[in-house]
Length: 131
Image (cartoon, rainbow, N blue to C red; front, side, top):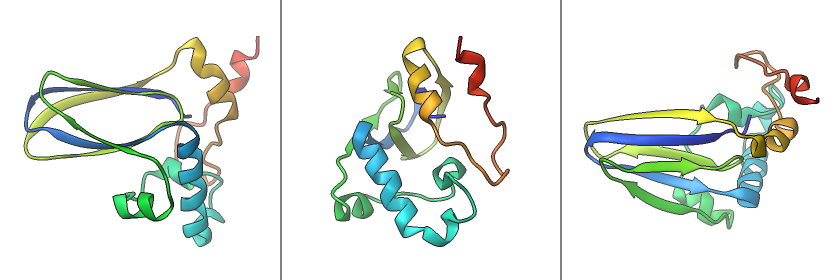
């Protein structure tokens, strides 16, 4: 639902993050849907499945702006609505993460495309926020 996210690394080896923000996130999603056109016929939002890893080469080839961040123990990574993010560990560590919403998020949630194939649960009823 294009929620914001926060990740805290308690201890251990660093994590590396690729972050694609804002309009480049929408551009990346469009490029992925084009590359996976056979799969997107099955679901309205293949990105919700998190079945694919996006490489730096894919981002560069498609002229998508991104940042590479290294997160060390004791540090937070916060991503905003519609930001694509993925990370990997450089060794054993302990981290925790959660998605969250603020009033600012509501317009993103209303515009978000949900999974249509039924593999991803739950489906969010955004109508409860219309008042």
